[in-house]
Image (cartoon, rainbow over all chains, first blue to last red; front, side, top):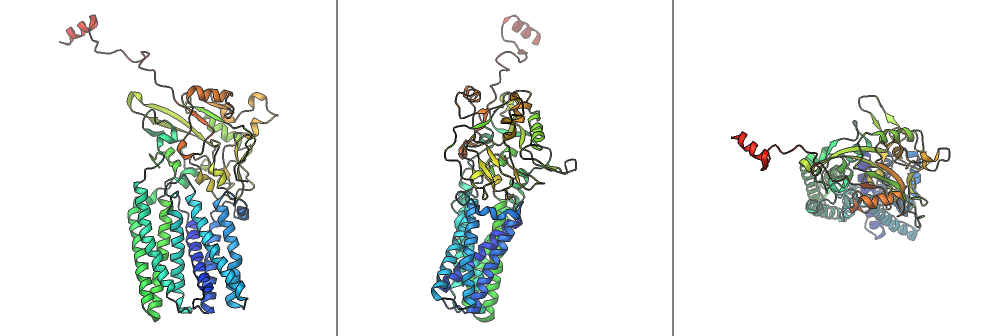
Length: 311
Length: 242
């Protein structure tokens, strides 16, 4: 699958934003020690990342001016559900942000915090389900795809929350949560890769053409002499050549982010702040690499008509 | 509305494609483009059609494959277009309601005024039936020539999809595949018509008729054996080979 920069930016940025919103909202609702400067800055950053992501996602639309129509088909479409969840989350998230700046009734503010946290989780689940619901791509139609989206949201959100620490929080929880999320990704991603490697592709050039009764099927003449949309969008293969190295780079950046965020939690002062920023940088590099691989390694079944033997 | 129709009319229009007689001439491809660039999904644009790297939306593509080895091998020309599935994920993933399946005849269509061009329906289609129009920025697909088959301005004989009318080898047939008594259903039953990628459960409506078995050897169209066994020719062959 073609890894569109707008979609990678969208999923990574909004995932981190929802993760941060989730953590700050829960921390506020359960009374962790955050001052209002920290709370306001973190909530503002979370909403900024979410909005950047949603805006980026409209760049890959043919008709961005009609994007509002995507809120209508929530009964059947995960993309529509994601849009509805994202828009619905803005209301409690906005009230939660205002609560840091202006006095609001305690009950309203805490209820908004809980609803914002819930909306954040729901939106990230919908993002993952957009991909996981596609039967045409076995690398996406996999039970670990949604958990990986959630873990990235948690890990990158916690890295952000920890990096903002110097603005005014006395809690170590975010650093430990970041380390926990990164450690979980270090376990789950290799599990996902080995599960894909051992699973047999469900479709072949023979089932795609129905000509298996005659023998092995191979292309003789292509259907068109120039490129077409299907080949450009679904036939992207460049990255698979380097998949092993890129997977290695992903694991290294996850390990580094994990060690740096533990280091930041165990130290104090400017050293801790610097380590937390480095951990964040490694985590963001990791999520960009992972999302790029997620697309580039995805083998769409339509490639069976263009010379792929199994998908 | 992208939920599938609950109570289909019991009618399912579609195509039956005979891989035995298709000669890969591309006439259906060209006539499809010609009709549809002026019909329901018009315009069906091409970017730089005469330039070094043309890119355009087409609703029907004809591949050619080789299957099997040696004397058992065959060249098979393979038309590929929307199969108007009974359970099309391209419809249910659409976030806007642009992609829909008609209850009255099972045709899968795109309402271009609602399409935001997100491309998710093309991702959901294993058959590569949907192409983004590079000029219009909306998704295009086979309409089964919905603007021909019910068109009372055309003579009745022409109320068929353009590809079916254009085929010179009668490899394309159009009809109601849900009616077991229809000509297309009888043809599918007689020739063992099959579904593409049945394992995905999309339940395509269009059926493909397999190439008939090769008869070259059994009815003596091969050259005679150059080394006869027994008989006068065998004796002569032995004598002259010494």
